[in-house]
Amino acid sequence: MSLISLMGALEIGLIFALVALGVLISFRLLNFPDLTADGSFPLGGAVAAVLIAGGHDPWLACGLAAIAGAAAGWLTAWLNVRLGILQLLASILVMIALYSINLRIMGAPNIALIGLPTVFTPFVSTVNDNAWLIQPAVLAVIVVLAKLLLDAFFASEAGLALRATGANPRMARAQGISTDRMTLAGMALSNALIALAGALYVQTQGGADISMGIGTIVVGLAAVIIGETLLPPRSLWLVTLATVLGALLYRLLIALALNADFIGLQAQDLNLITAVLVGLALVLPKIKAKLRNKQGGRTA
Image (tube, rainbow, N blue to C red; front, top):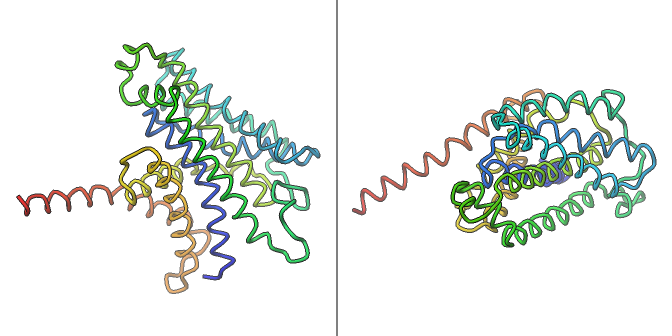
């Protein structure tokens, strides 16, 4: 695999690290099975693409995309906590609705951004054509900042209340925590990160497409599970670090599989590779647990 292909895999992995952090909040911390990601990821891309194509600042476009994603996550949580709709069903309803909303926002199935300014433009040299190196570097800074901010938030009083809401809602309510508000806030934060990832994704790919969100939640879950397998969750800062590393490893594995000539895989096999990797990620923790039990039995 060439250096440019490796950096391209790293670039996509960093974008999906934001998705994975969002999925971590909903699935792991809030214990909220959320499929809104498949709609909020293209929502962020649609909002950013329309604004950039309209001549607006790319950073402003990213911020508004994150706000749009937060609104989608908040709506999913509202359907659950206020109307009593099951968590999974509420997220499916919002995901389906977002497909039409995204089409309305874009006005067409896709929007091209080739030649338009992006958040990477000020750092890229048109003479040396160093986008393949600069874009991953800029994304790395964004991901590190997002991770550090999340770590600081989860260590705060509000962050601890959010974690308590997912860990033990009854006990959290007994301590005076409004679990409904925490669920609304946590789901908004989760989908804001995912929509931000979508906004950055369309700027690296040169355009937005209505179908680009398919499988987003699967990728996010795979990154979380792979990360947990790599680094056991002893503390929250390790959990977020493992999630980022899991997203990077996931994309690198896909890139290696697609670039390994002896395997014979092609671009159309991406979903097959994804399914195999997710299956392995789900099985690995069980295998590790069995090995630990065997070792424990031998030592005893």
